[in-house]
Image (tube, rainbow, N blue to C red):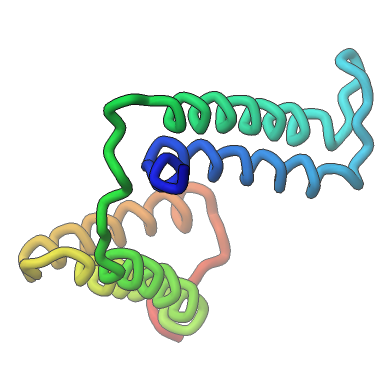
Amino acid sequence: MFDRLNRAETLAGLLFAAFGAAAIWLAADYPYGTPTRMGAGFVPTGLGWGLVALGAAIAVAGFFARDADALPQSDARPLLFLLLGVAAFALLLERGGLVVAIAACVAVARLAERPYRWREVILLGGGLAAAGACIFVLGLGLPIPLVPR
């Protein structure tokens, strides 16, 4: 019984259903409305129910699959460095500017995979920083500093 619950498909379906249930719960305080006059809770609730249904279908299919693989062992390193990259971006955006925040995010997140190639980090970080500056600051006019103050 528990080996059937430890399958990737079953756990993925349960995760989808959990996200759908969370969306339904969070949208419960918003007015629902009708299909012709939709309220603020109409779309989140509908999408939540869709996620619950999709998750249930995936979980049931994974539970009853005959040749499903067990959940593989995973390494925490990629998840840790991806989260640290996002944290570096959030912490550096206001003080360091958009260019520094994007470059730091790329440099830290790239540590998730081995081997670490400096050329890739420099090219990707520089390209994303330039694109972010052009799109968000120059194109959209967002009040984000480009460089440290």
